[in-house]
Each structure stands twice: as structure tokens, then as C-alpha cells.
Length: 111
Image (cartoon, rainbow, N blue to C red; front, side, top):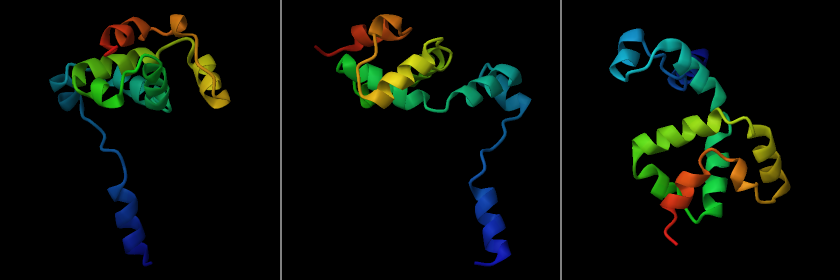
């Protein structure tokens, strides 16, 4: 592998930084956007695992992109993130009453 190929590959996998103008089109401002991006590590697997306790599939969550973003934001800002992750790591169900998205998942449940 040449250095040029390496550099092209490295730049090709970088996340594009959104400008203030692009963020304003999305009705966002830079500081909360950066904060949200930094908190998202592991958010989706935690959210999907808890949704599965209510028989809600990832496809059902993704059917409404706006709702999916709201659920992800609530999950990423949850004060029980560590407890939720620990329960996933141990393979036990998380106490759904502690989840900010539990009522929404319950309403989305097909059963």
C-alpha cells in the first residue's frame, strides 16, 4: 500500500464536519450537535436492546426518522446509561421503568 492510497483511504472515512449554515438548516446549533455526537457511542445498541424488551424492532424505530432521532437523543442523555450498558453486558433485562423511552416503546409495541 502506498502512502497516497493510505491518505486517500483515511480521508475517505472521516466524518464530514457540518458548517453552522448546514446545522441551521437542520435547526441545530454547533455546541449541542457536537455534544450529541460525542454521546452516541453505544446508544443505538442500548436503545435496540431495550426496545426488544417491548417487541419493538429496529425497523419499526427507523420507520419514523424524526422519532428515531428523538429516541436516540433521550437515550444518549439518560442518567442510567451505565446501568443499562452493564445489564446488556451481563445479559440481563434492564429495569424498563428507569428508561426515558420506555413509555414510547410500550406505545409502539405491536403486541
